[in-house]
Image (cartoon, rainbow, N blue to C red):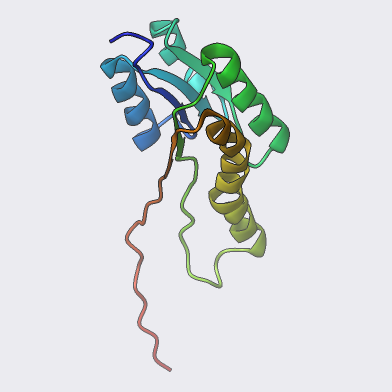
Length: 150
């Protein structure tokens, strides 16, 4: 596929799971990918295997400096972003009295505010381009159900 017609994907949380599979599928199709992860080395193999079509970029979605730097790296590498995939996130399992406020706040920082941070950084570019897509990925794991009786 010609790079003129290929899409440019910016995928958060591309080190494992759905984000990784999506990055691999986009590359296999001939598209270009900015694969982000908190640990850049976990996505570096994608860039090594696809040096002209993939960039591995460090990104903690809760760090505004890294968010800006990662979007700038995407623009420097490929000139635009066609598809933003907000995939970074994690689950927190436990009964309400078992998880701490700090754990819950950190999950919200990542899963909600991280998504907002990246979206806010990419939206001005999509508006300027007058095209683009944003995909927000969430997941639900089975929750243990409790029956209480006193």
